[in-house]
Image 1 (spheres, helix red, strand yellow):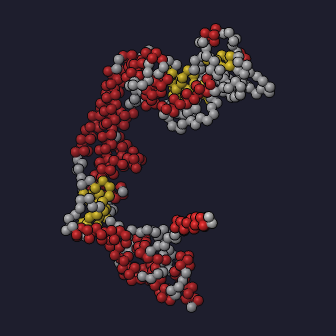
Image 2 (spheres, chains in turn orange, red):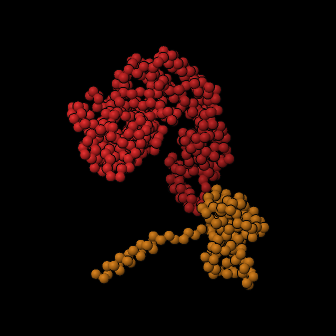
Image 3 (spheres, chains in turn cyan, green):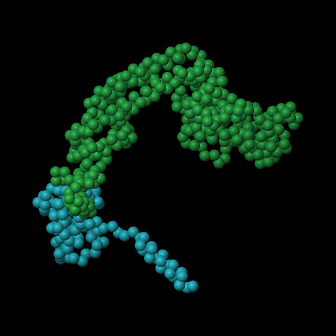
Length: 132
Length: 389
């Protein structure tokens, strides 16, 4: 008799956990593709040039969350992701931050994901420099 | 979808379908790889149902058909379509303005849907299995006559001639445009082709409309004379009454009509069983709303606030419909009639006013002058029915 309510509670708890919404995380591919679409990039060289001049630039408005690109841009996105792949890449919001994310990860690989989501990578990098 | 047609994006046209460049993300890329592998395994035989195809080294995906784009354009962009229509029909606009239907759609609804509902019980005439011709024949028994039938007929004939002219103009234009329209366009001329196709579609719609109107006119001419005269009278006066059911133009709302049903004489009794006489009145509903039943005549009744014309009837639990329909008008009229006949409860003395005075009486209308002796011959013979007995 005493088992039944506990069992019921456990089942409910399990189902509640299953049904609870999971936080959505953007993929590295989507983050880079959104930049490629926003800046209308054509080549890797163009991207790198932009990354140097644009390292701390203001984030473009309305970066697409679910970008779709044509075939030429798809291979460009693949190339960028392949070159700069690191766990911080999904949080990059400007071309400069794509390059920066790799360097930041090499220096400090254990930053809290919530911090990454809240604070721009460029600011984290600057703050690190000050602290370092 | 329509923005594709302005030539900024490269599209393929194959048969009726538009094929647009495929956009990629990793999942789409996986799908494309699968498709490619399947094609390879089948020996490069392209499946006809496939949504994807390769053209000059690029992937394209099947999208909508040109036919559907043309068909839906008017529904999706009504303003743009109206502009195309205006430009196209500019030449015949003055002539179009001179035209008007013999009886408009509202009157047709009233004549053929609302009035038959209330006429059903008279003279064994059944509403079921009656078509428009039979209804018209029955209504024509009222003997409504227009004041200048010959002039009205001449005017209608003139309108028919104008319709013929317009139809001829439309047909010529249609032949010109449709003849120059290739069945399937090349991508560079897509926008031009599309505009042409919409124009041709509009012309076809207009032609169908005028053909229907002419057919309607032909049918009118074959009607027996009383029926034609009835329609002419309705067109001229905007009013008709048959067997206590009728309509008239709404004096307050131009373009609207008041559909009414007469109550006939009836009687109600008060708390002490004394009968009161209620003369005939017209319960009406406006076709332009609000669809709330009113009493047209100068009238007093426990469920009316004062002794005045055009008073709304006090109703509980009645949700007035928001749009004009035959069913809505019928329901509103029935609600109003039922309230006048059976809505007053002598024991509860409900409504704005009560028939008999008692205690602290708040009635602003007195019904003392309406009281009948209990042995009134009309009551005794059954001519006058006490409705709330």
